[in-house]
Length: 137
Image (cartoon, rainbow, N blue to C red):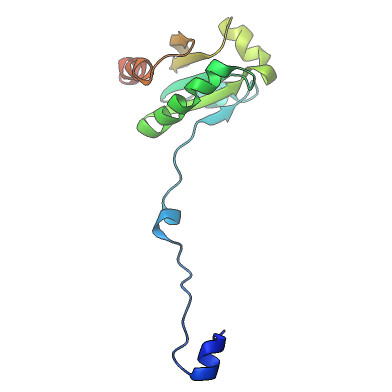
């Protein structure tokens, strides 16, 4: 639709671009996948990659401290590891299965079995070191 100025005074009609700005066309940042007791076997234990599973709860402050680290791992190792989050308040079977006594706990699972874990808030380096240890093992 021509602008009022162009209607009154003439001039070229401006065409609006349907393309999104460059910042909006970027691929979305990889995020951890939310898993549950129901799909844990399929998504985590049957994964052909190293799986990193963050066991967390909404009320857990240390869980919120490591959440950005878990997200950064999903970005850094995109396509090479499977990064997941499991809300412990809604998924008690997985907690019992792995003998989880406190959160945050991050499980490292390879070929359907737990190979390592980190309990409590740690640095990015601590998590990355575990990933590097197990990713090609």
